[in-house]
Image (cartoon, rainbow, N blue to C red; front, side):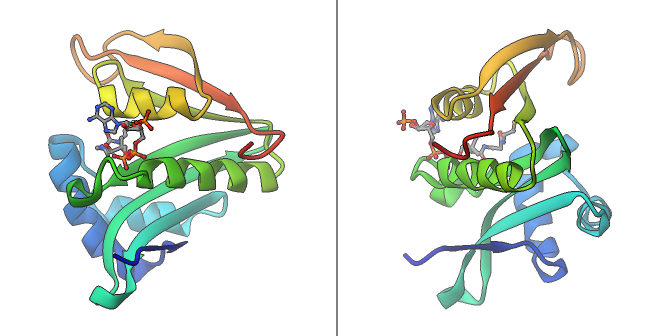
Length: 154
Ligand SMILES: CC(C)(COP(=O)(O)OP(=O)(O)OC[C@H]1O[C@@H](n2cnc3c(N)ncnc32)[C@H](O)[C@@H]1OP(=O)(O)O)[C@@H](O)C(=O)NCCC(=O)NCCS
């Protein structure tokens, strides 16, 4: 299956909203939120598409860059292609983008019960630096993680 990674554009939004609803439920982004993110100057979003299938969207990720820091805004891989290394590729690309944008570190928040995401981030060199109690609602803590990106993805 051929999947390519390209900059996210407005025509990817409707499909991204569908994936977000499936993966994030009540906290999923609306189309308006994606439009707003793409319109902002310091944002950079990438999307996984399947060119031989009508540009089907299968994942996406984005960062906000305010050097020296960059923040992961979202990352999602459609359930059909999870656990095949695409999350790792998206994170590696975000690290490159932050590095090329002159940032020193890439930060993110993750729910403390999100095993898949915690595994991915730790494997990709992120370290936990703080915990925000009930950040996602009562009893749902956030772990704040960071990774030095001065040397790029390596
Ligand atoms: C988190 C997410 C982006 C990971 O994407 P992915 O493409 O499935 O991840 P990868 O295939 O690149 O896997 C990276 C590592 O995580 C591991 N992993 C993947 N899914 C896992 C799971 N459910 N439980 C434990 N580890 C898991 C993989 O085994 C791999 O580790 P390994 O190389 O040591 O074997 C994806 O699961 C997802 O979109 N989840 C829903 C949305 C979400 O939670 N986003 C993050 C919000 S902070």
